[in-house]
Length: 84
Image (cartoon, rainbow, N blue to C red; front, side, top):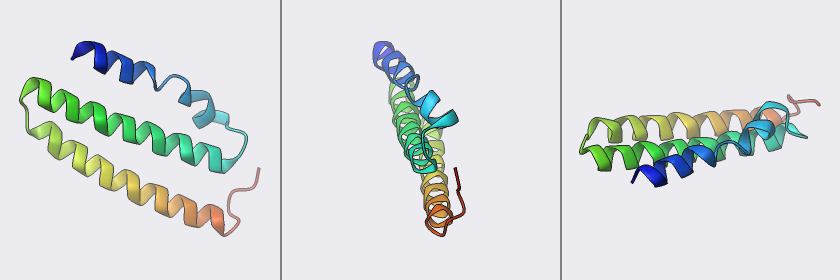
């Protein structure tokens, strides 16, 4: 299980340049969404491996907040708020 967790953490590395200075704001938003999904999966794996249900609650909350963040940011970008 630890190998899968490490692989998930390492899969975040290629997203960091896109998240930091992606070519467009939409690329940054997609990188944020992808990183958030991977973090939710990682939290679920940690909950399963450690038999801790609290991590599942955190994962659900984080997924909900991430979804709302993506929706709000995409509406903002759609209206022309992100120029670059």
